[in-house]
Length: 177
Ligand SMILES: [Zn+2]
Image: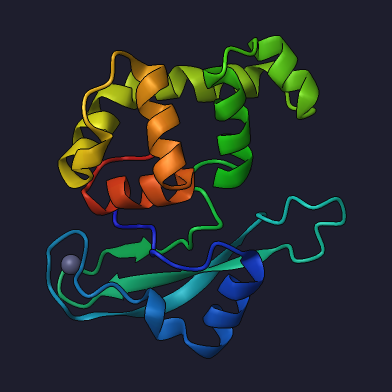
């Protein structure tokens, strides 16, 4: 939680920021104890460039350490999704197709994704949606009441991309995705 920084939807922007303005990733307070004495504590690398060549991999992710409680946290840009190798934009394309009524089998074929992956994303959204909807509606009143999960997410994704919705949720302390 509080892992996602509300910036850098494109990997190149993230790489540039890591090199030139790493302070934009520094949390104002420790996510564990709330203390403000948080400092950069190196970086780890992960795969995040999903292009065919994957030339930007491995992608550095900055880590921070609290001087009071000694715990660490890492901070992700909008272009990298926590826990998932696919970025938010890829996930959004698949979810939109499923919300429009496409079958999981067809969606996995269209995007050349494993059926398990598509099923997992869809199930996870179903499991978490009530909590997600509650928090997003609290912030964005215009999302209003929806008759079902489909209507809510179609409206939400028209209002903002999935990466932004997830960043707001993360900022509210909700575990995403
Ligand atoms: Zn702390």
